[in-house]
Amino acid sequence: MFYKYLTTLFITLFLLVNPIFSQKKDSFIKVKDTVAVSANLYNPLSPAKAAFYSAVLPGLGQAYNKKYWKVPIVYAALGSSIYFYSANNDLYKKYRAAYKLRINDKPDNYDGLNGNPYLSTDALINAQKSYKKNRDLSLLVTVGLYILQIVEASTNAHLLQHNVDNNLSISPKLIQQSATDKAIVGATINFKF
Image (cartoon, rainbow, N blue to C red; front, side, top):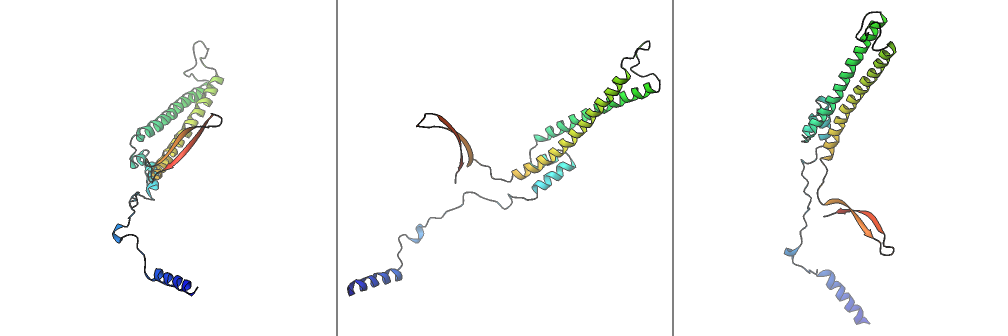
């Protein structure tokens, strides 16, 4: 029994004093990070700059984000809404001038022949209301599109700073259930390292 304790003590001391190496120092595995993050990759002021540039000149924020194909879309949207505003405003002024002349018993563009007017006074009032409503709606659409292109430039500048590569994916799968032979639709999210 004494020898049993002595043997256990000897083995314990031997293991504590003498370190055991199973590998050589030169054969250690060095792990490198596969995702290279540059210090210049993330710019927290980039969304603010893009929004400011778009506010100063529509489409400039999209050009700052290097999305040049969006600039003609911005100008087409804003240009068409400004065109409709101008056209509706001109027609509103035309019918308003005709109505003012008619209530002052002066000849207007819609008098007609032999005292038979092309448009009645009520028709002139309704045309004014309609074109004024369309003009105001066109102004609202123009302001909305202006704000939308600012928000789009800022959001795009923010999203350009995120890692979007092929190692991040979502793929739909159709799984056949073995018990009932019915198809189950699911989606998997894959992260490859």
